[in-house]
Image (cartoon, rainbow, N blue to C red; front, side):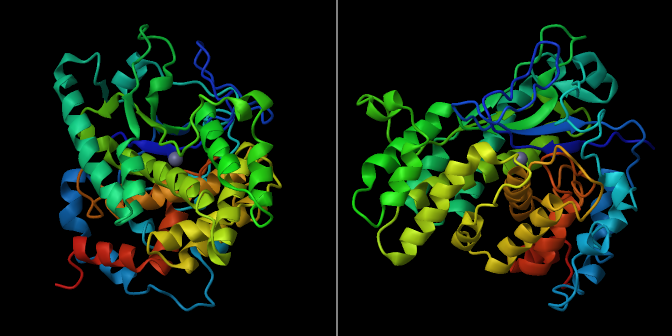
Length: 433
Ligand SMILES: [Zn+2]
């Protein structure tokens, strides 16, 4: 039986010019534009030839006991061992569950037709989506009731995300609670390319960046924090800096979700997307908080790394961008290991240096690093038992493109360095029973 596979490509775009023209093509990013915007997008693509390895309904039973549990016993592997991507392999955890057996089959980076970050990529139309087994929550009467169910589910996921992101930090919780949710309205013309097919995005408007830069600029005085002030100031125009009415505080941003869902699975099909996007919201919120928290030596160094992250937002797609170090602090603040963060750096660096997979001229190193957060969030929050809409192994075949590492590579880092992830996998697949 053929099943259309959802390929959820998660993206984080920066630069206010990440606009969708009416013809449905993605405009290219121009790095110098201000203000900075940060839509983080996720594409739902249905490849024509994809066949699932299993029907979702039979997956939970078939992944129980094996091969997940057998493979999981190999982790963590010896410290000296190379990671799957360094050996040119697909992660042994993902491999049994996907049709693709070679990395090249999961690599779309720079592909003119299939990488959404190449300038001439075209979205599917609503009618094309229908043929691919997708319904629209606004226009398909049968699926309209699921729209309110989606909003309810989003609130449950928000709660779980905030717990993972913030622990007991009430300011962080309040910022997560303030993340706005939109569901994208499809193009009126069912035959026009529809940017709403993008599964989800996280957006931080230019004025959001201005708000936090103003807060940083106003908060710090004195020699020790002079560099923080300087970095914030250079991101503000004279008018933006002086406006006494303008906000000067951390900003939560907006998640925009696709209104297209799988006809078979309904809104469950976009649950991993919602978790993914809350991951981006979390990193944005944490970076702002850290940027504003300099006091002692440790927090000063941490604030410096966070301000650098904000400052380099525009340069994320520069091939030689210096990767911001703030994700080390970020992952530690979530109770994950420094080694996990370092693994994500190692993965991103290998892609940036073009030492894995095919050479890709439009690769955005800064996005790759941020996308590891989105992917990791769906694996730390979502179901891992192969049930309908489960993040694992359901997202194992998600491809590498101009802004995303292969999900399989993120899975490999997590299996190696996240106790939390291994425990979740073990529990949900009943490996100990
Ligand atoms: Zn993303």
